[in-house]
Length: 451
Image 1 (cartoon, rainbow, N blue to C red):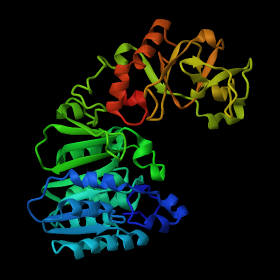
Image 2 (image 1 turned 90 degrees about the vertical axis):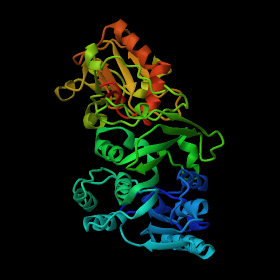
Image 3 (image 1 turned 45 degrees about the vertical axis):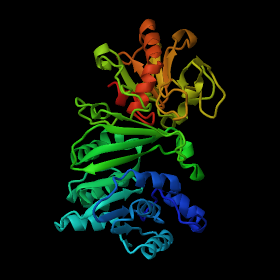
Image 4 (image 1 turned 45 degrees about the horizontal axis):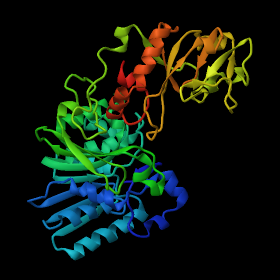
C-alpha cells in the first residue's frame, strides 16, 4: 500500500509500469522497485502448502509478490487478498492477478482500494477471527507521528510502532491464523534501537523466526532505483516453537553467491538482552556473534557522548581558519587513514570562536578517541576510531562536531595509553565482525554497542 503522504517503498512493477510512474511522483512517494528474483526468493521461503491458502498481500503494488507466490505455490486452492491505493499500480495489479485467475481455476483474487491499516484495525476491533494462512509483505517505509491517525488506530490494537513498515508486519501477523507464515522485506533498522523494542517484543512473542536473508551490498540489490536502504528478508511462523534460525547472505539480487547456515536462536537474540536486539551474523559460520566485550564502558571508568557541537547552531561563531581566540572544530573529514589533517580546506569551518555561548560545547585539551557515527556499509571497516593527540593540536579547547562519538573521562581527556589501547581495540577485526552482526548502519555506535 502507498500512503497518501510521501512513503518510501519497494515494489517490482509489471512490464511498463515503471514508464507510467511520474518521475517526480515516484521520487515523492519513494516507489523503489524490487527485482523479480527477490520476489521469487521470498516466495520460496514459504513451506509448500498442503491445504487451501488465503494469502494476504498488504501494499501489493503491481502484484509481483503475489505473482511470485502463485507461480511457486498456486497448485493448491489459493485466495489472494491484496491492498493497493495507488491507481496506476492498482491497474497493473488487476492485470497481474487476472492473469493468474484465468490461468488456473485454483486461484481467486480480490483487490482492496482502501487503507490497509484502517481496514485491518476495523476487522480486528470487530473481534473477527484471523483468517490468513500466509502473508507476503513489502510495506511502505514512513515514520508515524505520535498523534497521527495511523498511530491512534494501532494503539487500539495494542500495537506501538514508529514506522509504517513495522505496523504492516505487526498487523499482518495479527491477521494470521495459528501456524500461519509471513515473509517480509524490511529495513534492518528494526533489529536494534529503543524505538523498535515494542515491535521486537511483539514479533518475538508472537512468532518464531525461521529465516533471515541479508544482502552484502546495499547498492546492488536495488540498483535500478539507487536504493541505499539496508534491507533484510525475514521469514516468520506464528505461534510456532522457536528453533535454530537459518541465516543466508548474497551479494545482490542475483543470489549467485548464496550461502546459508543455521544458528542457535541464542546467537540471534541473546537471552540476557532486555532490549531483544536481533543480531544477524554476516558470515555463515557458527559463533560469529561471539561478544568481544567483557565489561561495560561504565565499568572501565570511561564515558562516551555524541559530539557536542551542532555546527549550524553556532554558525555566527564560525572561523574559516584557526585563530588564537578560537577552538578547533573537528569533523570526520579532518581525519583520513588514521591521520589528522588540520586545518583543511572545506565548506565547513575549521574553528569556532571562544565565547560564553560556545564554551559549554567545548572540551579541554587532552587525548580523545573519536569514532565516526555514520559510515557507508561498503567501507572496509564499520567501526573507525581515531586518537586525537594533543601534541598535534596545541589549543586549550576542542570542539567535536555532532557526527562523532567521543570517548572521554568526565568530559576531559584520557591518558595516552588508554586512548591508544581503546582505539586499537575498536579498530580490531573482532569488533568489526561483531558490529556487522549486531547492527546494519553505523548510527549511535557507542550507545548500541557498549553502553
